[in-house]
Image (cartoon, rainbow, N blue to C red):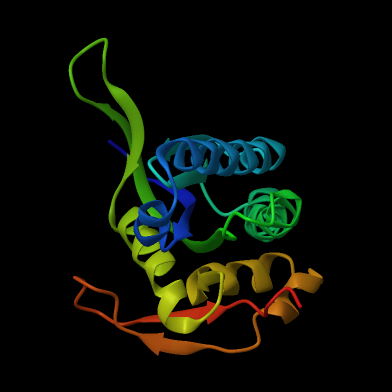
Amino acid sequence: MEPAFGIVLFADIVGFTALSEEIDPAEVFALLSGFHREMAAQIADHGATLDDHVGDGAVAMWIAQGPEVPMLQDAISCGFAMREAMENWNRDRPAALPAARIGIGMHAGPLVVGAIGLPGRGKLGAFGDTVNVANRIERMTRTLGSSLVVSDDLFRLLATEAPSDERIDLFPRVLTARLPGRGRPIRLRPALSIR
């Protein structure tokens, strides 16, 4: 199976376990329904190749034979649009309900697309270190205090392929971090806050 190039985005409700402990099951359902509706709309609007929704998380992937400017810009746009959608959604929710914060992690690199599981009941997905790293980056949003963090690999692709993209300026800081369960450190770029 030949690897393809992909951009992988993981989005997750920060502190969902603690949040669901404080509200009743109907409110948990409403929270998850609203979150997935908002995330699915952004994923669809930004042309992801694959997407999935599991628990309090969403995954989107843009896949091609190599890095292409439209997919790079669509993926970055999707991350910012998800963040903005959550801000707007929180403002529109009843004041008595706690705000839902989001963490978004993104990475780019080689991956393989295929179906796993029983024949006829398999699930199409993407596999490889790129997917695992994107997931771990999403978890780093808590540590770094940013709702959107991208790998420096993804940032450099955007800066090289679309140097006039204004969003490049929204990632001014680069830092090196160790991701849980991974041996080699990685360079990350937290996005500036919305405000």
